[in-house]
Length: 162
Ligand code: DQA
Picture (tube, rainbow, N blue to C red):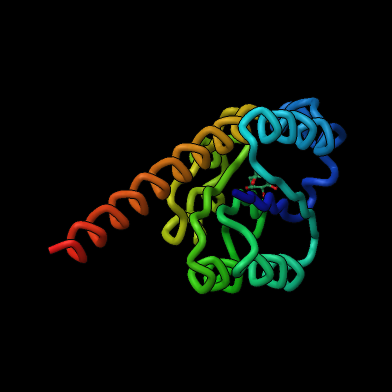
């Protein structure tokens, strides 16, 4: 099973950017931790960061037929991007939205996520640990999908035997 991690604008500045809000870790350190979790759990993982909305839309579209799950921190586009929301809705791949900060505790313009309604879930406010929780959450989604497929296969086999 393959997870694609998509990081939005300014997240390449982590470790330098507003450390009091986003913490001291660099993006590559967060990715190293996610990679370790993926290896332990026999998951494939790929990382992508862009400051450009259209590139993020392109990367989501490329997940079609390739990825089983998407973990996305759309960063500032969370609050503005109908295009990213539509791309997630279009590919119909289980998606988890991640934020380092608790967006509901901050400025009012950050309280609304245009992305959350098309995601399986949202994790916010746990700093870099939000990404770890997203990995755990995605593993759980994969287990549930597997169980559902096995159940469907059993039902079909028993119907065919009748
Ligand atoms: C963020 C929250 C957004 O409001 C902000 O624009 C970001 C980072 C977070 O991870 O807390 O760039 O997505």
